[in-house]
Image (cartoon, rainbow, N blue to C red):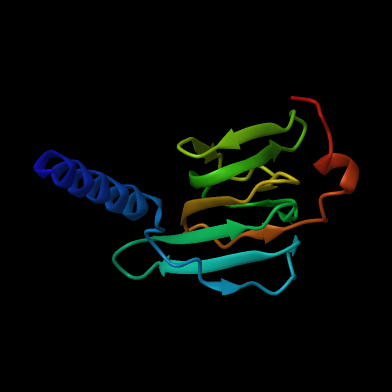
Length: 151
């Protein structure tokens, strides 16, 4: 009977650890107005640029099918994929599928877009230097571009 009790306590402890690992580190933030994207996107500005740190860091969470418009960052951007499966595409290149744990380096001045796949959520931490300017937005990603299977 004592062994069963120990096994039960161990299983309970493991279950609690798994639940803790599955929880989000940062809240997903506020639902963004559909100005530069299609679908539902949540943004949490974790750290804005200031006089000491010349870069900002944000958490973006996309519901399935949500995607940003074509855009570019004058100083570049690093995306650290925190959840799900998404797409990333630079102008003139094939669309890539990206997954949790991967890192994308968006070069300065390169037009690109990113978003969730049609059937999965997608999230990332983004950090961008701001001393060269803010994001420049272009046209919407078309359904044909979004659905492109060229990978």
